[in-house]
Image 1 (cartoon, rainbow, N blue to C red):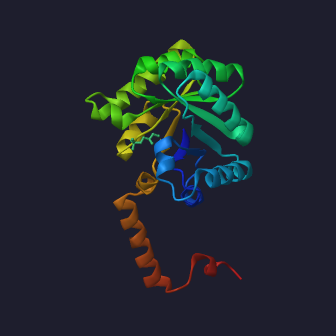
Image 2: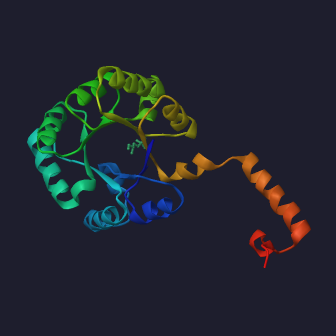
Length: 228
Ligand code: G3P
């Protein structure tokens, strides 16, 4: 499963990358409005980080027509290069822009997806990813995880190479259920990363190890006990 962090702040991306095997990061217009640094400074930082780490960079277009979206996608790809994936919203003009981008060799993620059919038409149009907003779907009284499972099944049965990158999570359980149903990627807000690996039983057991070790060996570490 590909793992992305959903944030604009490059310092947060680098911090999370120290602990978690992320494949890159995703942004969107709202996320940029919450960033500490200017967008142009962040774009330069993204390019440097992506070039040095082979991380994928997802940036969403802000145009409203297919032509505007396509022109922006070309400029973004020209700047970021091979690591770039353009995010295009699942609106009618966006579907036209998807095909223009694919004809131009620009990888595409169709985003702000809330239904199976939005995802299917995107896959048929050649999208490399579709990004369903799982919690938004849940909040509308539908089943976000179930919707993603349908997308994964439909893409597999239809022979579409399109990947589902789940987005908009409130719980680790949502992410777990996506992994179980074969979702190929997720993008997660920074606040959820620690919760991915936290478990009270693990913390308790490690605390127990430390206690009995120090009671027996004091401050010595295991490497101190190697044969001289
Ligand atoms: O990547 C999509 C994500 O940023 C949506 O966030 O907070 O609306 O669930 P949110």
